[in-house]
Amino acid sequence: MADTQPQVPSPMHAALAELYANIQRDEPTMASALKNACQQMGGGVVWYGSAASGWTDQLNGHSGDLGTSIGTAVSEVYSALAAVPATCSLAQAKTEQLILSGRLS
Image 1 (cartoon, rainbow, N blue to C red):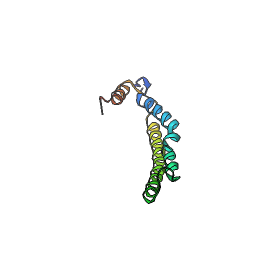
Image 2: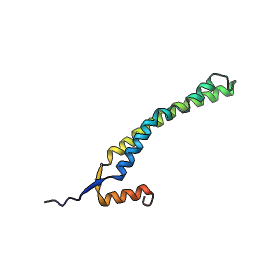
Image 3: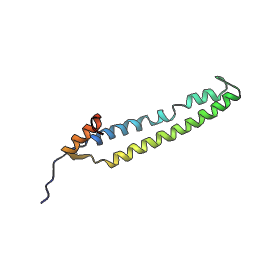
Image 4: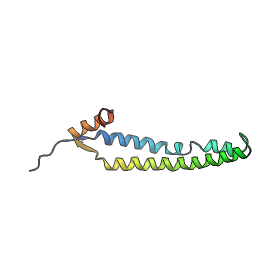
C-alpha cells in the first residue's frame, strides 16, 4: 500500500490562475494601448511632415507588436498554469509559498 501525503491547494497554481484571469481580462486594453496615439499621429493633426510620417509608421509597427506580445504573454501564462497541478503536498506548498514571496528562487 502506497503512503500518500494529504494534498493541499497549490499556492503557485492559485497565483497563476489569478494572474491568468487578470491578464486575460486586461488583454484587449493592453493590446490596444497605442491605438489612440496611432490614430492621432496618423491623422496629421498632432504632427505632420516626413519625420512625423516615419514616426507614425514606427508607432503603428510597435502597436501591432504590442498586440502580438500581449497575446503571447497570455498564452505563456496559460501554459504555465496548465503545467502546475491544482493541489500538492504540504511541503511543496510551503516551497511554492517561499518562491512566491521571493525568499527562494
